[in-house]
Image (cartoon, rainbow, N blue to C red; front, top):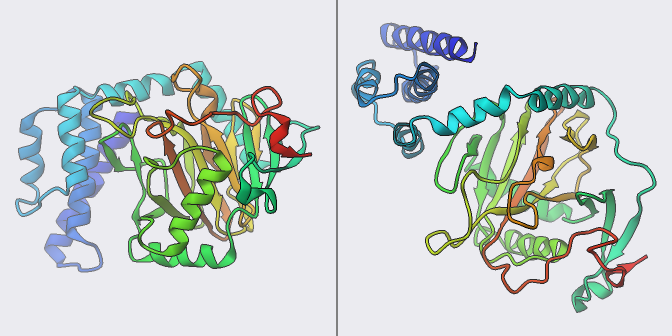
Amino acid sequence: SQRHEFVLATTWLRAAQRKVNQENDTTVSQNQLASMLYTYSTLAMCEQADLSPGLHHSLLSYDPSYTPDADTAKLFRFSLDQNCSWYDSTLKWDKTDMAEESHKMFNTMCQGEPKGPKGLKCHYVHYHRPELLLAPFKLEEILISPPIVLVHQAISESEIEDLKNASLNKLSDCQTMHNATLSKTSTYRTCDKGWVDDSATPAAARVTRRIGQLANLGMTHSEQHQVACYGLGGEYKLHKDALQGTSLSETNRQGQRIATVMLYLNNVTRGGYTVFPLLKVAVAPIKGSAVYWYNILHDSKDDDRSLHGGCPVLLGSKWVLNKWIREGGQELQSLHCPSDKHFPREYFYV
């Protein structure tokens, strides 16, 4: 069971912690061990329905000098306040027939060649923007409904190097975001990631503007660039980018993640596809291209069809840049989906 796996993990981590203390082993960070122990114990207690303030003190008894970092402490407090409800809802979905079929399809598609519906087209797209009339985007239809598109040559070689270099000293274990305020180190996303603000390098600001142009959306409240590196075997299991219980409000000016733009920063020798199992679509990582999709429906509810994952990297490595576009700032935008019905042909050089 899942709880058994978490309990085994905490048992192993406690043994490792004792070994490090007894042998003064400097090859492993005691703080990192304590952080992992704190996190996995919290997850185990969610399974065991035994999350209480007393657990906090028992965890610290293994290393009284350990001070949880902000994200780890936030995970514990959030789990305590919500009585592990976020964990229960995730687990509940994970046990559904849809989840089982999605995982099977994901694994099958990761083992084959990328594919999608046949008969789709490529277009030059300008959105009537003067700056794009002479240099339109090269858009390839991956799927019409819901719309998934691949924009070719969306980022230059020099911009790729600038953004990768800007992220290098910020790389850390990948975390996943559950809602607008809580993120935690991921057990199902194996990569390193770094956040790059628009002020970090001129390339970052240029790429943000270009993403706004290709998505035809406002970028005022978009998130920073997340540059992620997946090594050999690195993967991102099935998930949705939409945040739990998040919407535009007086206290949350960013709102929900309405769309995702993911740029591929290198060619992957083998593996690393982006797979949408419910749609039977797989996108191959092509250096310089950007895959773009929506995470919510017109009524602002999560679009379950946006469920996706990153296949394991079988040979080489995979660098990507994720940009999540939020609801905030879209109030005056004319939103169009890239399909014949919602994306007028006047935007195309067919």
